Length: 194
Image (cartoon, rainbow, N blue to C red; front, top):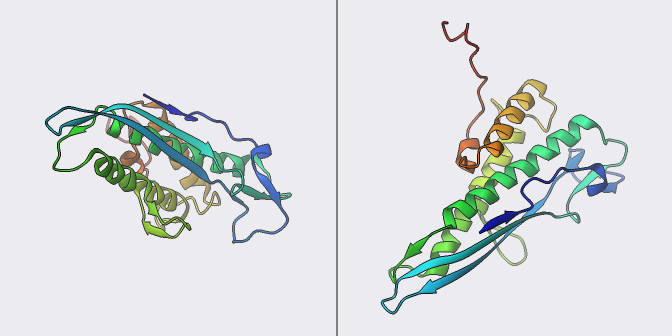
């Protein structure tokens, strides 16, 4: 049971160079998360997850940067997008690990529900059926009116997000739900009344 691709460090060479942005942004990081599970069944209709393999990868066809806009701050911002996806992949693996059930809900239905809750669900042609927690966090990171980084342009909020994402990524027990709110500055001992 493992998550592959968890600690990748992005480089500008990972990004397809384009001449003009299709949006108002200078770069986009797009990831794929795939899940493979094996089940064990007993004769009474009970099941358990026998193995889980989650893979996080960078989708280089959809990952791009506007030529000439490659600066360290933007790359650091895009790295956090990848790191958010890494936390989601790890959370998915944790929630599927040691999962078990009975015939009330099949193993595949249970795995699909957990996967869709975290990653969302799309049709074969890419239309969104449901948004998962991962997309909620990615959107909050960029666009939240109170705490969003404004796609790295709000340096104070970007710094808060960077610290919070790094903390959650470093804590193997932490999950994607811990990123699904605005990060807050940590109180200094004097500010806390010491």
